[in-house]
Amino acid sequence: MNRIAKNCVAVVAAMSGSLVGLHGAFAQTWPTKPITLIIPFAPGGGVDASARIQAQAMGELLGQTIIAENVGAAAGMVGSARVARAEPDGYTFLIGNTGTHAHSQALYKKPPYNAVTDFAPVGLVTDSPRILIARKDLPANNLREFIAYAKANHAKMQFGSAGVGSGTHLPCAILVKTMGVEITHIPYRGAGPAMQDLIGGRIDFMCDTIQTGAAQAKAQTVKGIAVMAERRVSIIPELATTGEQGLAGAEASVWNAFFLPKGTPDAIVRRLNKAMNDMLDNPATRKRLEDLGLEIVPAARRTPEFLAKFLPEEITRWGNVIRAAGITPE
Image (cartoon, rainbow, N blue to C red; front, side, top):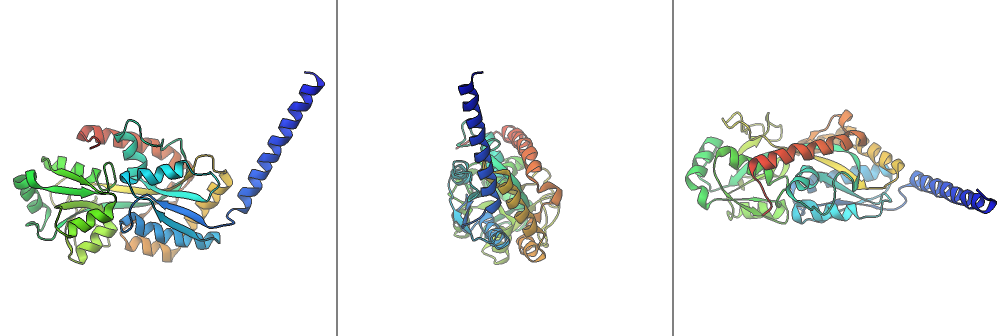
């Protein structure tokens, strides 16, 4: 190698070292301005309520305001894609879930992002059981009566969800298949609008988040039919599970997790993860989330490494479920 070539290599190496140093220094000072949390669902849904609680608590820990912004469309894929394309500077992150990061990858041949490679995983936060709720004038007060009604009237029934492939769609699709009937699915631009139509009696039932569905059932704007989990939940302990009411195989729970754009400096990922863990370990915040019916993920499952390993496994698992149930985009 001649002297000029050696000098060029040295200059490039020095520049690279400087950039790495600047990148590291930038990460160490982060955050210096407000951060945006994209909630990829419409306002008023269960993810929205829990995300806002977490955003406020994490913002206090980081010393900066976290602005919660709803970008709800296409079962959460529009908001998720926005974060996938965002600058990897730590100032835009996402609360994703089973629907946005597992169902979508299995349902669509060309989803707008790759859930595994287009994001920097931060960590799992909560699990959310689904709850089967029906319009208040549906002539069924428990799961056995609901199944009997569905078998007699399935041709004219409709169920709503936050969108095709969402965390409120697939649980109901699995429920319908387990009951052995075919019922029309009505996808909405978010769970909030679907709930409004359920309350108004324009659709027959939903498999909603436990926090929103239980609150509406207690307010008697809808009927609580069954908790779609292995065990009852503290937010509505009087409501029996699907298994307790004689329908095995209809359990459904959705996980929630935080993601940053791919390429975000590791120091920022770690700092956001620490704020996330400190927030979840705070008794007051933890109680607020548990009062919504959410289950806090154990600390060992809250690391970026765990989420990076867990996500491909979930995509495979739900892909198998979707294919077995014959679910396709509408």
